[in-house]
Length: 79
Image (cartoon, rainbow, N blue to C red; front, side):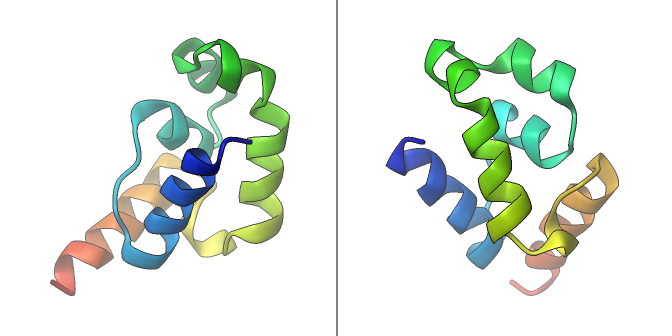
């Protein structure tokens, strides 16, 4: 996984900063959308990216569109 992908996911977790559409699809657990939005590198590394989300990120910030939306909204509320 590219370091910038990990850094973007870490910013999402730690600072509730939105990701791009590819990573958002990954966070929303939308495989079809993730493949459709992935560039060649991310398509080849999708397993590793999803593995990082699943194993290293809190489950309260990913898993569905509603969860991601609520996670980001909570960040805006705290600004």
